[in-house]
Length: 419
Image (tube, rainbow, N blue to C red; front, side, top):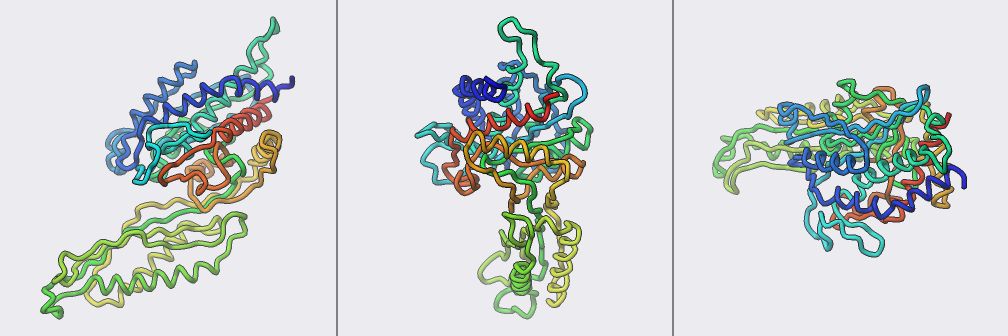
């Protein structure tokens, strides 16, 4: 039995334990908002300790968390060092998730297993990779233990593995990986971040979110000339924004899996009563950017469009507040060993080719890339987000994907660290 087969056998022998670990993680809610995620970090720490893995707890100061709009964030780092001279490979997954919403047939925190599927919020995105990464590391450690009187082979591996379990992906990641990197708590050489089992994602979209407030002057609807209608100004702005969105379709990305930029208006609030000219309207918009675009240039373009359009509405005062600016991810040249290893072992484990692609989502990986860390997105899950019902009712994970991805990651770590 070669080393890869030994890793696979260990994962198979401990898969029921891995499934129970994931169930325990799903059963602790991490809805964000409100973002009270420290209890989940405590539970994760306790479970890891039971496996002999010590997690460093890095609590973000309460004032920073409150200013960010959340309640508590404690990020975790598990470090496993082997011999000197090799790379530090980080594995990052996030525990925060959107609230469950309605329409569930299986309880969102039940972690039920039915017909080979584990149900629950974050079962696929991305508490699944808390499990796949933890058990991949444990399989690697088991390979290094003495066997039948032979000396330990730990010296055959060089470098280190770090597990980064963070709790701020839904709000942008600045208090998750961004906070760990900013404070010098980690400096990995390579990164694998939570993803799905049948593709290696090497690029992703960026996202700009703005809150646009139009201030007019409320007045009685019987005397509309005494007011300034903020809703009419908003209507003009919406027309301009949707025309801009049509134009964005002509900007094509060269990255497979990504098409073009787009703009979405996700929320509108305004007015006070049917018989009152609206004096205030608030619009929240989301502008997705392709990897070829520059985040600062995109924000400048959108702001200029808004300002020029609103200027056509006499008496309307404009406020623009940035809610989020997450730059796109472009692949760094150093990610080649990650891609090659995952593709090799993905084919061996799943029996299908594992292509590289981009994703229209934005992720925490951009924060590592901004620090010069070559990264890919790979983990446990189906071929598409839609298949998993992520962020919808009855989110689920095929346990066969969890088993396979754990093997692929363990094999990949062995390749990267083998002396």
